[in-house]
Length: 531
Image 1 (tube, rainbow, N blue to C red):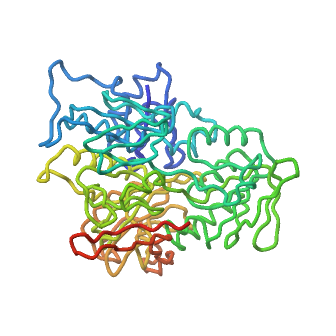
Image 2: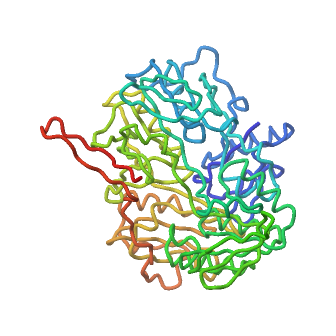
């Protein structure tokens, strides 16, 4: 049996903990669980899944009641029930899209292409349960929500996309034809900029199951000093694991506070206190200028921009991610370091700004406009977004124009660190003010609501997840900010303060577009790549 909990939906009611305590545990509101429980726990897990008030627990189809013989699943009004569909990327978004395509009634040829050799697996547990040793990496495989009849080409990276010829080019020389294709190649960890320093023994990144296994082994050995470069969500979660393992850890962050780029300075200050209260040596406004070798190819420490040095036997580079779009360089699509541009229906946009009919995008590489945020293009590396967007893309691939759906889900994100369940809904950095509406930072349990030009745009909770759904509805209906309703557990003073969010950056990143041709009917845009 395989289990995964959609923590974007989980609100911490804890019925699963009572019904299957050998599988699910909760620290305050932070839920941890065994992703592949033993067979003797099957009945308890089934009861827990049935009792979950928000139906957040997903299991293998084989663990669920099967439909009666001859039963037909509902089918959408489809214009593409047959033909050839190729999914490039076999992680969460790609796997969910394949399941939805079959659920929607697609009966044609389905091919999944992935660069890893293993089945699709869940990534959030890698920085949590796997690093602590609660579960091994091989127990993170995603549950099969339904049987999918597909050709699986795992361990075979895609190297190119011929949109006009409708072909996906593979590293082994093969060419896979398609009628429609879904691009879901996700991201990889951003490496240390100096390749020689990054290759030192003791330097790690964390993105895939192999990374997690190697880092788990290094931490289990009990290194006397651990250095983490970057205090985003991944870096902060790894720091939390180190303290849980009673390992000394230093975190170096370029910004003014942890989580600053995602949640702004007000919540960043709370996160900083949380880390220091748990014994983390947190150094903000500082960068690592060099990783130092002991002369034998092993890490011995780092030099910092303030002139100080840090001893370290293990260093984790947590500097964000790189979108896997290089293979699309000559495809003619609007693809770059910011992602692959698409419309709200997940249809890819080409270099001329035209929407394609047969190329779709989902997951971490998708860059799409969101009406709630002034139609600005955004790329969301969130578990919930990958699932929701994959379902929209799959539905639209087999539906005619009249029955296609827009991707309008409000972003939801979660993190578990230092015993606290942190959740957000909306886009916290799209704000000019923030107010504490429940609890307070001093209590360690609160709801912070963000506003932009007089309307609610986001909310962040620390161990108050049950409020998240309420505030999601407020965001969706553009409720006024500051909130004017009466509520239980109101904040200390309820007065908004500046959100102190990062300055918005234009996603240019070196992309240069030129327009060529003389006749208006022949003019075309081309992307000029730097040499």
